[in-house]
Amino acid sequence: MTKLEQASGLDRVGDRLQRAVLSTIRPRRVRDLLHGVFLGHPLHPAMVQVPVGAWISAAVLDLMPGQRRAATTLVGVGTVAALPAAVAGLNDWAALSRDQRRVGLVHAASNTVGLALYAGSLAARLRGRHGTGRALAYLGLTAASAGAYLGGHLAYKQGAQVNQSISELHRISDGWHPLADLATLPQRKLITREVDDDVSVILYRHGDEVTVMLERCPHQSGPLSEGEVSEIDGHACVVCPWHGSAFRLNGGEVVQGPSANDQQILPTRIVDGVLQTRLP
Image 1 (tube, one colour):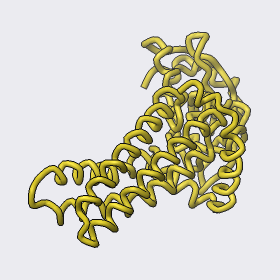
Image 2: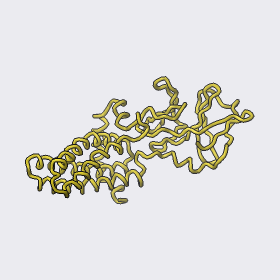
Image 3: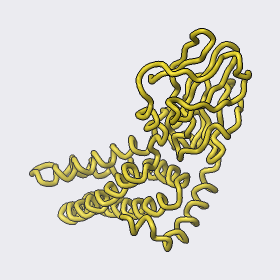
Image 4: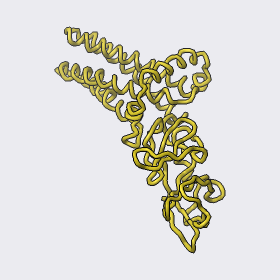
C-alpha cells in the first residue's frame, strides 16, 4: 500500500482524470450535493451501502436453491445503485491530495471491474444463463471487495474525507480556558488564539456574541485563520484558503465543499470580561 501511495506513474492518468471530472461536474451546487454538504457528512460512503448490500445478499441467495429470481433482482439493484455512488466517489476523489488520488485511482479501477462483471452477470441471468451469472457475480464481488479494502485504506490510513480537525479536541483538557478580554476583540474579524497553549482556534465577534471554532479545516487541515469571511446565503462564513470549503461562523455548519464535515464550535462564556471556552 505504501508503494501504491508513492506510485508517481499513476499521476499521468490521475491528473487527466481529475481535470476531466472537474470540467464535467462544474456547478458548485452539484459538487456540494455530491460531497454531501447538505448532510454535514460525506455522501459517497452512505451511497455505497446499497450496491454492496445488494451484491452480498445476492451472493448468499446464489448458494440457496430456488432463489434465482431474487438473486437476479438484487444484482440488478446493486448494479444500478453503483452508478450514482461512483459519480459521488469521483467527485470526492478529484478534491484529494495526490498520494490519496493514486490509491483512489486503483480503488475506482477495481470497483469499475466489479461493476462490469456484475453488469455481465445481470445480462447472463436475464438470458437464462444462471451458472455464468453466478460465476461473474462472485468474480465481481471479489473485485468490489478489493476496491472496498482500498477505500478503507483511503479513509483510515490516509484520512480521505475524514474530519481532519476533530482530533484537536482530544488535546484540550477539561474545564474552562481563558482566551481573551472581550473588550479587546474587534468586530467581525478573525482572531487566532490557543487553548492549553497547544490547540489553535479562531475567534469571531459579532456584537456581544463570540464564536470559537477549531482553526484547522476538516477537509485537509487548511488554516482557516488565513481565510476570508464571506456572506453566503445570509450567513457570515469563513472560507478555507486552500480548497474553498466554507463554514458558518454562527454554528460551524459546512455550506460549501469540498469538505462534507461541519467544523467544530466550542462553547463559550464571559467571566469578569474574559472570554472562556471548553470542550463541547
